[in-house]
Amino acid sequence: MNLEYLGLNSVNGPLIVVDGIEGASFDEMVDIYMEGGKKRIGRVVELQGNRAVVQVFEGTTGLSLANTRTRFAGKPMELAVSQEMLGRVFDGAGRPKDGLGPIRADEYRNVNGMPINPVSRVYPKNFIQTGISTIDGLTSLIRGQKLPIFSGSGMCHDQLAVQIVQQANISGDEADNFCIVFAAMGVKNDVADYFKRSFEESGVLERVVMFLNLSNDPIIERIITPRCALTAAEYLAYTHNMHVLVVMTDMTSYAEACREFSSSKGEIPGRKGFPGYMYSDLAELYERAGCINTSSGSVTQIPILTMPNDDITHPIPDLTGYITEGQITLDRELEQLGIYPPVAVLPSLSRLMKDGIGKGYTREDHQAVANQLFACYAKVQDARSLASVIGEEELTDIDKLYLKFGKEFEGRFVTQGREENRSIEQTLELGWDLLGMFPKEELDRMDPKMVEKYYRKTSFE
Image: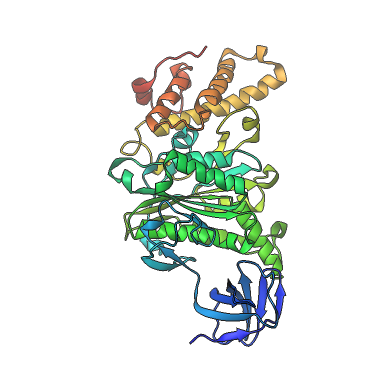
């Protein structure tokens, strides 16, 4: 029988302190009853002898020190999971918010997940097509990978997230076994409505599980949101053998909620006020991606974060870069030029790309085309720098050709419509069209046999 405790020692921001506790555990859920019988929930975040510090999800406004009753549940926070989650919209704590009532749960799972045994991990392979050339062609997403998008405040990462959710798919017999878990943290009401409306109108909501934490929701719920999303993803992937793509935006909002919560606990701050355990906290989330040998399913992550002041050395993108396998970087200058999606090609990379593309996955020339496009675009930057010093008229013919290539590359390959879904074949053919601007001898990052097979002379006027 669970004991019920009457009265609180103190209230501090989202935290309450309860004295005289026996047998409580870290992360244990707590039912909090206010005067009048209204119920809130919390979880134990700190234990000091017989004193428990409890984090209240809905906030502490209205709690009475004398008359508040607390009951410890004896278990951590759990999420009700089943395949009925597909097509449903939940709040940040996993409660249905689409008016369709609760789901019929197959089981209840700890939102903190279970660590994946490294021995059971299977090396990520197989290609996920997003329909976006700069991602599919140059920074390919592989099943089981964690590939973040580094954006900036006010940029078009929300539109890019929607386009990825609408267009992402896998090829072959498993195409029908693909789904998406979408988690939004700290978003405004109009952005949340945009996400939901876009998925409904495009008809993809039936294969999406949505978790929406709004900017006016408690920060404690924001800390739980990605954990609920990943718990749902793990259930669908490892119990029902589905291939799950998890899109989480915005991880900076999540990290700032952690900072605010850490400050309310009185913890010693680390870099820029973030808690010293921020690295391990983010790793706890990101490392829940992967493939395991006991299931044919997979969990792939695309965390989206906004870099404060576009600073890639800020703790959040910095720590994320250490944990994940590459990054897709959005460039503000490209966006100001009207280029969508404004992907900065050169600082973007996918460390697992080489193992999930090529013959048997995409096409045999994929890696060669990507390498050559990277090399040519790097020379474009050199030619532009030189032209800014000596003037474009003084450049050599080949440097002028690189300038032309850069303009066409950004205008035709990087730029695409917000609803334009390019297959990997279309992306590679477009790459060959652009490389055809150069004489064969300039394609020095390719096998000559590959050049002979696919090369065709082109000219853009």
